[in-house]
Image (cartoon, rainbow, N blue to C red; front, side):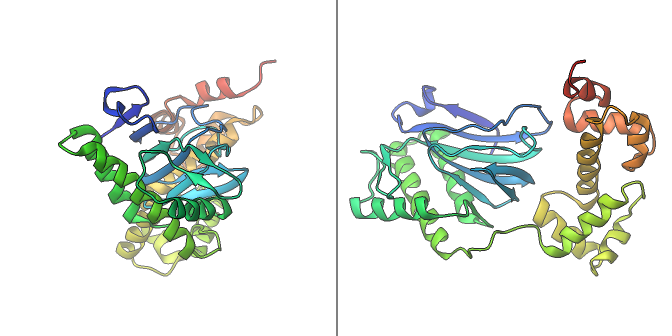
Length: 295
């Protein structure tokens, strides 16, 4: 799906007053304060296409990977763990429901073909669910792709097709929630230990072979697993760890920028500055100036 952001009132959404927003977006740079905690009146569904996203939903922390779907109910708080949208690609759909009560009673609206009984059952599942992230839910990705095609191409029957696809998405989400294991899905324990080891010695120039050996895999299998779980190659994943640690250190005024560069594994201050700006849109000095309190 190419990048597109459709908001209520735009030509593609005329005739769909229940669709508040539909989007497919690739975020290639960090934009600070771009994803602060916020609640909305709509049901929000987010499908991860690429990358690793750290969000909180209703004060609970979640890590999302490619193929994951996040479900945010009307009125729930949602935002980026660091206050900004992570680097990666995702698609989302915001749908305004006529009613969704705490008891689970759901009334989608006249656009929906769901029966009253079906709507009530789906609503109850959504409201009672405690883990709002569905892992490796590729079926949802297929439906997002179809919605994208129908909304942008507007071929004959697209209005009915779009509404049926939203119904189908709600049905699949409810079915998957009932099957989902109650335990929260995190990065596999082996890779969490690997990341901890990397963070403890970021100044070391880690090679692909060293990282693969630490988890007992060959380089090809290791690369495939890291790509599957994070959306990044192992070396790009390591760079993201280095940058996240650098962001933390830059918020400390007592630490020299050159020391931060070397401590986080960059060859020089220039290498650090170039990489940091490429990934965040700011030089280290600009970031520090924006994020340190004025004296």
